[in-house]
Image (cartoon, rainbow, N blue to C red; front, side, top):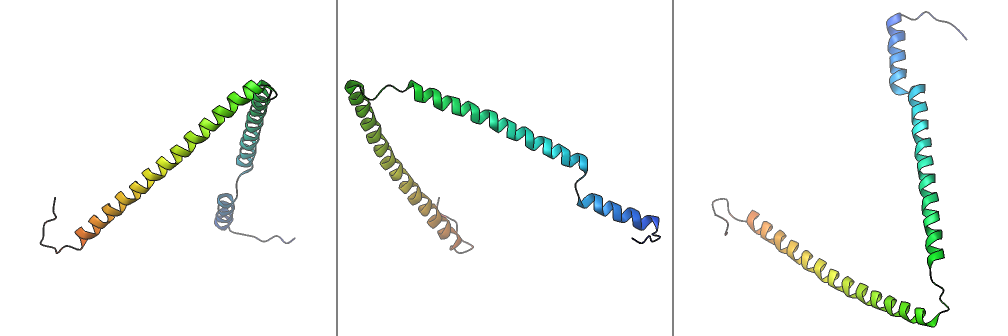
Length: 122
């Protein structure tokens, strides 16, 4: 390795450029700590969710009882019917909203096509 005399101003400029371009060691360590904290937080949340899923699985009634099976089937069928009706109603609402926005766009296009001296209809 060769050593070369470099003016102090040039050396400072190069060091400043490197410092601005690369992350400092302390910032890098802090980023690693933050990432580790996030991973630990997610691990705790996953453990909580897994225990909740396990609790819900254990709380589920046995399906072998025909009375509970029929009641659950009726609830499931009713929920499915309500979901279908809601989806159809929401589809109609969205289609009407599209029609309203198309009408608004047509009105805006009509106003921009008017002559400069005319007043728009209110």
